[in-house]
Image (cartoon, rainbow, N blue to C red):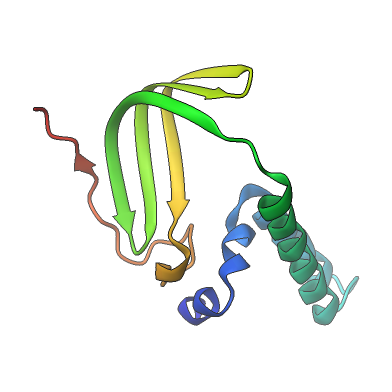
Length: 130
């Protein structure tokens, strides 16, 4: 069931962010306590996904430069996770440093499972030294 939902609605991945899971939990509690209906819960979630998608596509225009040593990476059904050591991220006038940076990228057309819920875990692949 989760697989078919992810294929039907690419915006479903936004529901598994920290903000999305908190909203879902709160709305589920309201439905269980009879404070709101299931239809209103669905409307809230649709509005959340739409608003977040609009912000991500229209308002996020910052680009940056990332330097560091790639420690490991994973690819699980179109969801790529990169771990970068001693990362230096420059975005505009700002510069950020991190000992370890985790980057998650989703290849939208290849997602077959809901992000955040593992279907089949692949072992991390260590970068080979030259």
